[in-house]
Amino acid sequence: MEISRQSSGDLIVLQLAGRLDANWCSHVETALSNAVREGEHRLHLDMNAVSYISSAGIRVLLACYKQLRAINGLFGVIRPSEAVRSVLELSGLQMLIASETVASATNDDAGKKLASPSAAYELFTLGSGGMKIELVGDPAMLERGIGTTQPAARRFDSSTVALGIGALGANFAENASRCGEMLAVAGVAAFQPADGASQPDFMLSEGALVPEGHLVLGLSAQGIFSSLLRFEANDEDRRIGITELMQMALESSGANAVVVVAVTETAGLVGAMLRQSPTTNATNERFGFPQIRDWLSFTSERSFRDTTSLIVGVIAKPGSSFDALLRPLAKGSDLLGHLHAAVFPYRPLRKGCIELKTAVTSLFDGQSLQDVLHLICDPRGFSGAGESELYRGAVWIAPIQ
Image 1: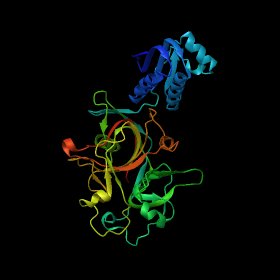
Image 2 (image 1 turned 60 degrees about the horizontal axis):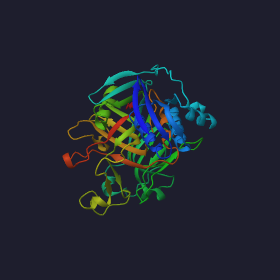
Image 3 (image 1 turned 180 degrees about the horizontal axis):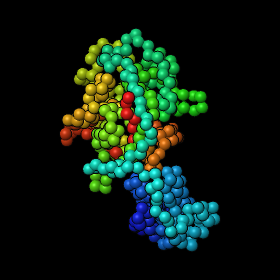
């Protein structure tokens, strides 16, 4: 099997020659996947020189067709050989055969174009939204425990954005030992239990059901988003650091502090996770050395490469009323932030102006949540992991009122 690639405007054409059987279908699947991961959502397969296609090959074509159709992309077979056409028609898959004449994608919903040294941006105005924010809990709890405090249960509805340390469930007696990294947005809440459980847990709003749990330390905001910032790293750098992205999000809002929610195609994340719930009363310094190893896990390098992430956070210039829960995003940066990420297997994100709830809830289909972690920067030069890096995605922004 020979695979060659050509481009025609915004359309990528892969030309195949040979037999598309079980031996070669993984190679074609990889070529298609690589194109999609590069942000190409309009693909054609020229199969004029393909003499045979098996069921394994059909499955590859159908999977790509469904994937791109779900994100408003384009996929089809052009110039099929008689052998290919016959198999597709007999299988009832004529919809995979496309016309060779395809109009270019339109940009009827194009936003305002922006740029930085590392990426291209598109800014969409959603309205005159904004959020009010609340600092929940006492930061000293991390060192000394929660004492006799019994935090009230909270409902994480569609207008709430929250992140910090917490757990899902209405009973705090059960939740106290499970509290770990947590986030909530668009009626979905997820957390990484710190009681030794290996799998993160989550709950989605369904009908009258709204996720409920305890946020023992963190930030909670209520309101609506005012803008959407689409971004894609340029061809030279191929990825963008999260500090630059958050700086652009803050600048585009014109505010001193913002709530952000991002769905991103991710190059790698740098983060930390609690290994024990900090609600228990402390008998010694938890975050000194070497006992910190019993309390926190760190990514020693960029982890979760080539995944899709849901990132929830607060970004601000110094001087806000919630600075106690913010940290510099990078060494030497005056930009402060607190960011949590939920990690999922890779899936491409539809381009243009997209709806927040749909983008978020679709990530949780199929029980695919892999992890929830607190994003950090590791600035230790050559030996450090640096910061999280992203390929492309969408950032919803709400100025904090």
